[in-house]
Length: 591
Image (cartoon, rainbow, N blue to C red; front, side, top):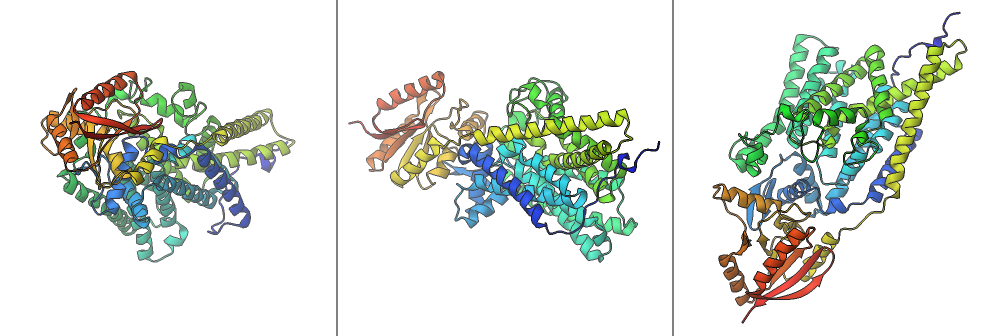
């Protein structure tokens, strides 16, 4: 007996080209977006408003505020300006938001959630256009329930915005190579390629490793040649894309020349020359299988490989115990989806798949040699995995239903259909478990931020503040019109201690001669010059306050106690207030 048509390997569905969502589709994606936002709200924004993790989130927020104030994407604290470790792409996004909100930065964490929400809509539209409604629904469901995506959607970090810009670039690639554009005028095609180049270049100045997006572009052009394959058309498209890419990159090089002294200089090398300078080992073959930071004994290859297979929870690394990027079942469906796309997909679908996989492979390969390990590093290239998982799951379930309806099915087909059902169950259980964990969480407020906001309204505007809290953090939350003095230049690695001040004094010890904010204690001795300066300030009737972040270790507590004892030998220290996060004292002259 012949096989029924329904059991044949189905081709990847080509969705309708209509741009507008139907009411049913709008309800579907709206429900997923609502679930995502509720999960983010349940997880809370404490780390977001604290600008964690430090120093990353702190630098991004500070650069954005200084952009809005006209200084550029730089750091400014203690009365001095310094270059940021990071390129200015993400601060440009944040700076625009700060400027439109009168310089306020407290809502920056919510901006990440907004960008994440728009990313979900964008993935749905892109996947629906190429693979249909079912594939798009599954793709955005896997994305919205990705632990790394949820976590970073409440932080002032560049990972989710970079993902969004990459998705926009993928959309423009599909537009630039569409039949409509092929039938349009030359200037319209070149405009589309120009916008693609701008987006690719902008993603690169958010994070320079995103230049690997060009690998994805080259691969998709080679594997799926453009419809208008004339040499002149290819040259024009290449010129337009290259011009667009060069514009943001050239602007960033100009900023580097202004802030760092050279177009090719790095803020990382300025702050941490021993790691990122000429003698550092930022990238090394040893990191493929050797230990990396932070606390990764497995090496990069194992971490990223298990992540791409949805098995990273087996390593017991930080993040969700089950998976961090997407679950094992989604990874299997993504493999099915890519195989089907390459075998029977349309040209736009194959072009997108080659673009995304080429970019992801190049990005992951680069980070395999990097000193630090973080699954969020590859999130921008992972958009293709979510879309592939959606396409694969939709296709596999259509095929499974056809097999179960076919009475002439073979034992192998029935077993394969059973495998699809098992993967469906695993996927549902994994996603439901993640949703349950997120929805059961209870958001926490930040005692530190609430304390600083209260102090901002109670401390005199002309006060001098001595603190072990990051001066950059104080400059943001207590306003820069007050004078800030570091209690010391130590950085014991606690949540609110001053990474930047510590690095500046390390640079000075190594021979750097630039200006640094003053500190009350140099090493374990009080600075006579700063003690005299504080005494003069008090003589001038200017209030002086001491803000102490609660220590997290006994060793650091002992250091703070010895410094307070030394200060009491020179000044009268009166308690003002104290809570779990910070203690406030007022200094007065000892007569």
